[in-house]
Amino acid sequence: MERAIANLRRARLLSPAAMLRASSPKLSALLRPSGYFRQKTKTLKSFVRFLYREHCGSLSKLFATPTSVLRDQLLSLRGIGPETADSILLYAGKHPVFVIDAYTRRILERHGLAQPKASYEELRQLFHSALPLDHRLFNEFHALIVHTGKHFCRKQTAICSTCPLRQFLPSDAPLFPTAPEKRSAPSPAAGRQSLVLSS
Image 1 (cartoon, rainbow, N blue to C red):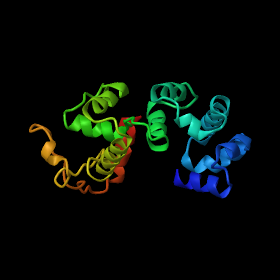
Image 2 (image 1 turned 30 degrees about the vertical axis):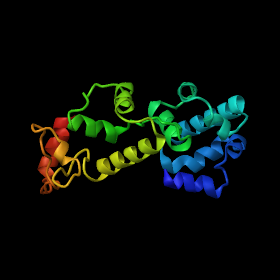
Image 3 (image 1 turned 30 degrees about the horizontal axis):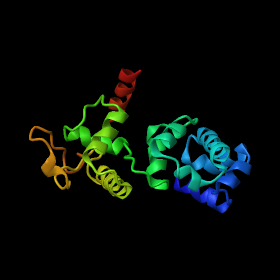
Image 4 (image 1 turned 90 degrees about the vertical axis):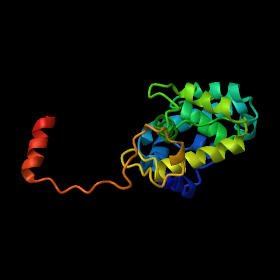
């Protein structure tokens, strides 16, 4: 994503007005490094058209809209789901809305604080009911969750032994190894067998 943003910055297309004027093929070419660039182009175009239609192109007016109203407006736009809408509200608009991402869900589930089938809204309300509705607190809290998810509570090779949240794990929670186990390279025969089994 960083490369795509750098491309937009070099092309001077980071402002809503510039994005509105830019052609979709040009935006797609600049967004290509981020993946799913055609979908993201359509989402960006949809957003800036909405911004000009409903808020005269002003981000200040956009973020002055009451949180619940603006969240519903964002969710009505093409390509914007709950996580993206809440990220816009929290990080760009400084609205007190907690963002639920894969890191948050993984940590909650491993600590027995959420069920695997819990909805996005159920998890969001878990934070809203337990913490003061303060965008600065939510921003910092979520940043700490992301750091923990990236460096300790990783998807495949979690490092529980040095995780700052280890003391809060349930007593019956499985502890993950401190490092991934080393595996010997599979033989050609084993590789062929795995291909047969997976076909």
